[in-house]
Length: 97
Image 1 (cartoon, helix red, strand yellow):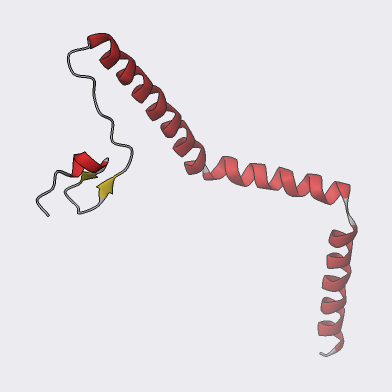
Image 2 (tube, rainbow, N blue to C red):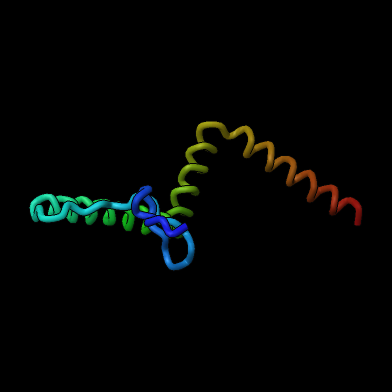
C-alpha cells in the first residue's frame, strides 16, 4: 500500500487493473525517446492490423470455406458418408409416413 506501482514494472489503471509492459521513457535523450516512439508506433500498427484481421468476419468465413473445400477434395470419404447418412434419414422419415 502506498507503494509506487511503477516501481515494480506495473501501472495501476483507473479501473483497478494493472497495465503490463510499462515503458520507461529515456529522460533527457531526444534520440532515444524518438526511437521508443517509433517502436511503439510500429507495435501499435501491428496490433491494429491483427485486430482488423480478427474483426473481418467475412474474410474469416471465406477462409474457413476454402479450408473445408480443400479438406473435402483431399479426403472426400467423410463428406460422402455424411451424404449417405442424410439420405438414409430422409428415406426413413418418408417411409414412416
